[in-house]
Length: 233
Image (cartoon, rainbow, N blue to C red; front, side, top):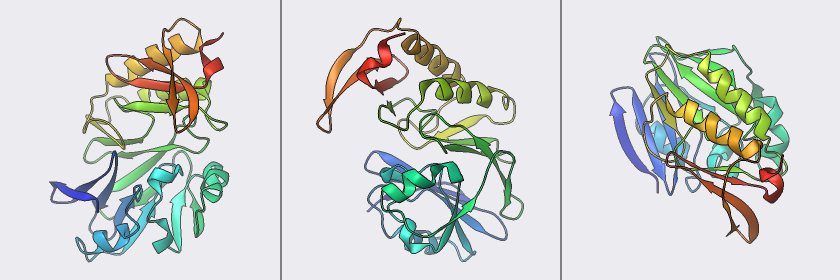
């Protein structure tokens, strides 16, 4: 069962074996942001914390973020993530959200920002009132998965640069992996590391991950797990 940690009166985080998800409460609605890796009862847990009508927003559809989705008939997700979601057995109706869409929880508006690269439909969520950015897997100080058919390092770098356009509108970043929270200066570090990898200037080593050989680039601020040929120009 995920460990619940109260961030403040209207915000909860859940630690679920290396991944986390969140509950944000407004005055009219509450939003689960992702449903974790091993928490099929995420909805029930959230509803024990609030009496508000509950919605679900997914930052992306990798399997460690959707374990409790089946309890929702519908949920918010970027439609570019649909194939990824269905491939991993995802059920329910996708309510499309894209760059610039806002979800009003009542006194707490969540702004959607498109950040493809880690997956085609990855999104970040800006809680501007509380000056918080939920970054999914894109901004974190853990190991960022960039191997496999749906990853795109060029888009990943572009998305990091896109997040810098919102600088000054958030003070902290809430990632789904690694440390909680992290600061905005991590974005520049990730751009630097990802660009070195993309340009073939980074040093790393081959490791076995889930029975697959991948190339691991370890920086002081994060790691990148990439396809073997990602280190080439």
